[in-house]
Length: 209
Ligand code: PRP
Ligand code: URA
Image (cartoon, rainbow, N blue to C red; front, side, top):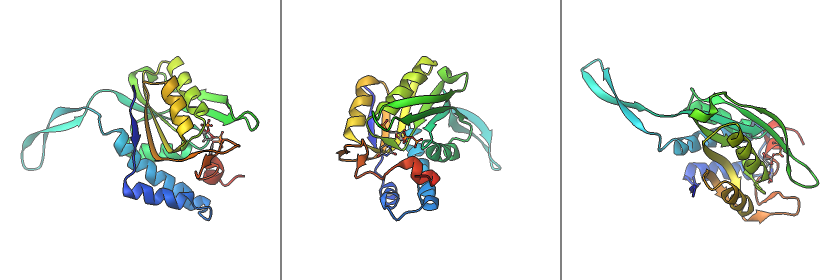
């Protein structure tokens, strides 16, 4: 069974509270999402294996450590996931980037896929799927299925705010995927929005409504 990590560092919790406030505008919302994504990316990469490498400092030779093993890919779910991919790339600049386009049908709240472009060697990479909101879990679960169908084998999901319903669905349908989130909220409302949540993440990042 994949792990569920609540990355509730005080800096993350504080920044998320500011993002939740309805007065917070697009510029600050986007910057805070970028900053939190950076902090969360440190947690997501915590268990990357290290290997020895021989180097020379200006003073002497030494056996130092470098990251070994699988390379990484980050895959934002469009649109709102784009706001998290930048923070991840600041921590892992060599990661390749894939894109999955999905929107929720306003009536049924089920995801509709409209775009998919992934690195061709996705099967050899640790793939980090990013989207700020895990609400019903439909978008994240379908995106993981798509990644697996395209060959991805090791997948982690990073989000900002999750609803219990979404966590349950993703864990049920993809028990091998580790989930990282900054807050587990109370519930979904009748429009399948997270309560208390932060509203529509895509609209708040891009200034649409
Ligand atoms: C939002 C969000 C997730 C999805 C979560 O995207 O960014 O992708 O909803 O909801 P779910 O867990 O119920 O599937 P949205 O459909 O609003 O598209 P957008 O990012 O283009 O605004
Ligand atoms: N998508 C969002 O952007 N916000 C929610 O609360 C649920 C889905």
